[in-house]
Image (tube, rainbow, N blue to C red; front, side, top):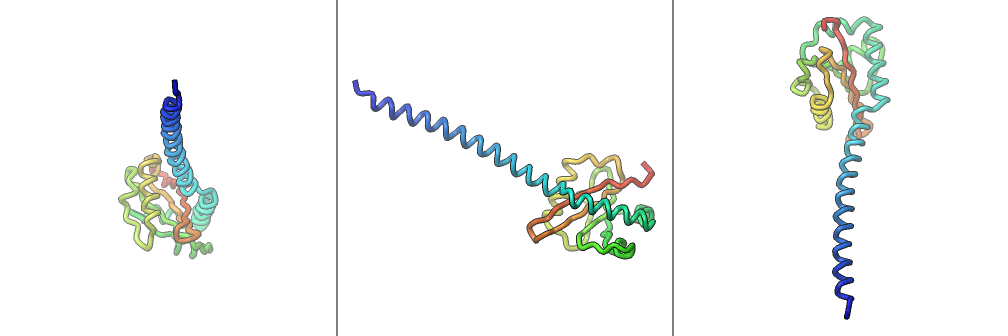
Length: 158
């Protein structure tokens, strides 16, 4: 009996099983790495430290309480930080958080689509119902490489 035909069919079946398994693993790991890199960009430690420093500058210059009482939607904080003695090249916003609905808040100015994506990410992934305000910073190293961070700001009225 000639068994060469059986060996060829067996090789095709085993190869197809291995290829399907490898394709499934590639898709799984591809999604995992995409989520990992997105999270790295959205929780950048340097951005968080700089944002915390900006918050501290506003507290020390006694400007934060005034901003909390006058901001009803969103405000770019560059001018306030420059007036307080800290010149910042990055975009930083104080956003009024209306029942965890910051993505609908109108932020004026020249913002990237990635910033809009970040607002959607915050809306869907983070529970921001405990605070009335959120400070958000966007640091762009290049046009396509932007890092983000946020801090919740409490106004004492919660």
